[in-house]
Length: 90
Image 1 (cartoon, rainbow, N blue to C red):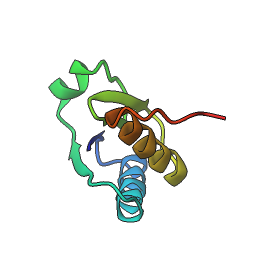
Image 2 (image 1 turned 135 degrees about the vertical axis):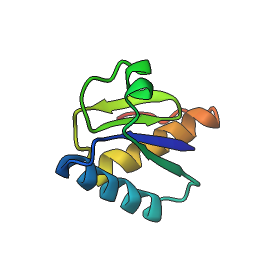
Image 3 (image 1 turned 30 degrees about the vertical axis):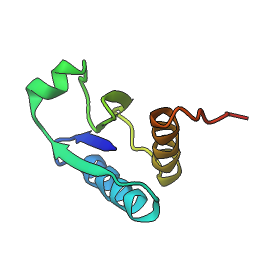
Image 4 (image 1 turned 120 degrees about the horizontal axis):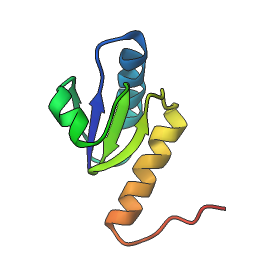
């Protein structure tokens, strides 16, 4: 699974990067984590504020620091979609 973090190096971006790295350590999935500040790539997703996260090519969040639980839940959902086993939201 591929996660892309768009950030400028601000405190919020660094904190979210640390949260994502912790989620990767705790999860059972193989996650490729890429950080970038490339404006052209950011605009290709329609992103106008940071931090922003793209997971498996889909925009997950814009201008928000996700929690550890939110990142791990996103990993579970992305994995379920990849394996065609939808996760039920109760």
